[in-house]
Length: 145
Image (cartoon, rainbow, N blue to C red):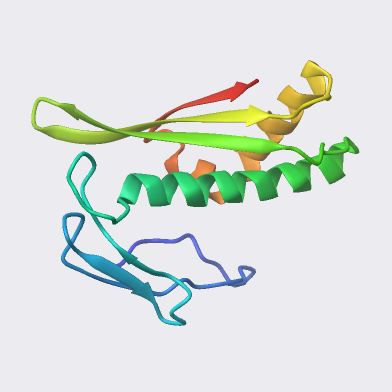
């Protein structure tokens, strides 16, 4: 199975994550080719010490979004507060027999004027690769606290 990645000759691949997974979300495990990531999986609400895909997505998206906020801050010449924080919430939903995601990012930019904080969050949401990947596919709310 391959996906059209809209890669053209001007595109440079900056990084490729390689992760091997067996056993799925309930009792499975994943590890990266460099072994920096080695995790076990446990379904939400079930006993076990593993994580789940929704937690992993929330962690990756919020980290990426914070990086996108740094890019936006430099472009807009707005200093980021040192105690910037993002709390990501990714819901696994079920309607009938259909599973789907919805998500929220709660962005805290203490000390910034509200207009600046909203401008940074909006710009980051336009450039963050995770935000782009789920745009028009996942209901997303960005809350600037």
